[in-house]
Length: 107
Figure (cartoon, rainbow, N blue to C red):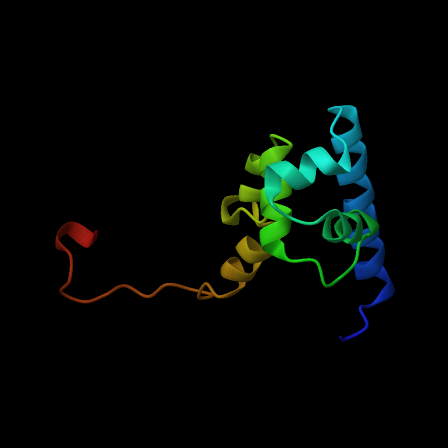
C-alpha cells in the first residue's frame, strides 16, 4: 500500500479518533458497533486508529450508526466548493462581444 503524506495520515488519525470519541459518547462498545455494522472489531479498531486501508463503505456504515451520515453526505458539497467556484470564474471570458442577429432589442 502506498504511504500517505504526513498531512493525510494526520487527517485519518484525527478522523479515527473522532469516530472513537463519538462512539464512546453514545455508549457504544466496539462489540455494539460490530453488531450494528457487520464489521469485525479488528476492522473497526483499524478505522479508529486511522488506518489508510479502511474502506469508505465502512466509514459510511459507522457514520450512519452514529447518526452522522448527513455529515458524510455533505462532505464535499459542490455548492460549498470555494476552490471549484474560483476556478469557474477564471474560465469566464475577459470581455463579452455582442452576438449579431441573435436577440431583439439588444438582449
